[in-house]
Length: 371
Ligand SMILES: NC(=O)c1ccc[n+]([C@@H]2O[C@H](COP(=O)([O-])OP(=O)(O)OC[C@H]3O[C@@H](n4cnc5c(N)ncnc54)[C@H](O)[C@@H]3O)[C@@H](O)[C@H]2O)c1
Image (cartoon, rainbow, N blue to C red):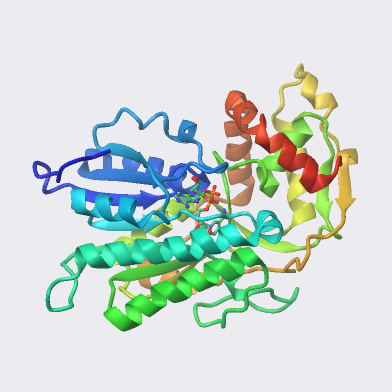
């Protein structure tokens, strides 16, 4: 825990990242250190729920300009103390419960973390940054990381989500994220709070917890386990390589207009079943000839299971605004991103073993009932 204000490195910008031990947060931290090196300082606040994994950050752990604080964003005193003890310039708020299936089983924790936790983050930042005249100290910025799921579901031929698309969330997850977005918008409107919101499509890449589609399929296929597909497998998601998301977040915070929302997407729509076929084909292409696992990987593993309750049919982002105003575009083609992702999982078997032991097993059994 940092106990006193950093005074020696006044030129170094300090980021408070929440949820940095999760999938996107840890990729973002790696991206930021690659880009800025010692020119920034990052304080990562994470409660280390089942989804938070300090192993994701072991390469940066020793850096002098990185600090990890284990704290719950709902713990007002802990968050306030971090703002009091550090001159925070940027907040990048990832911490959330993020898995739709879990939200269907246990919605309350989604409201607690995603809504109440965001309120705590906003309020502590406001308290720390607000000046006596009600304005905000120069250069302070809060970025709220959100999802395209707040916009609801599109028909198969039903256009795209724009920043102006009305919110229509369906799952407890997306409803809680929508509520948190509205809270941020209310701070912008009421206090002129210096914030941005980003609504991003589905991410994939290294360090993703194997309850999510892509790492689940990679992990199961390599073990010859069934590949559970919801419903008819034709639900469409727009997939973005996680580094492209990290870059977009940084650009929005540096170049975006304060108070604005930016949609981030890959223009890379795929049916779930297509993704699974691509994973199987890519695994077979990448596994060395002598690797025993080649015998296990097969399309026969695909098993259709009862559809997710309230399963949204299609999500598709129109990233026109971020392209026009900020110049961001997705850089990683899906065929390259999926290879990079699979190569990462090949090189990190121990990581996968560690995260799939213990509680994950119990969860998996309950979710897919022996499939
Ligand atoms: N994964 C995606 O495809 C995707 C797409 C768009 C937006 N998002 C959003 O991006 C953010 C990060 O998503 P992710 O996939 O990395 O999630 P994740 O589940 O992998 O990570 C969430 C992190 O937040 C931490 N956390 C959870 N509750 C906390 C609490 N009360 N206090 C402090 N830390 C807590 C967890 O320990 C974990 O490290 C979320 O806000 C999510 O809504 C995700």
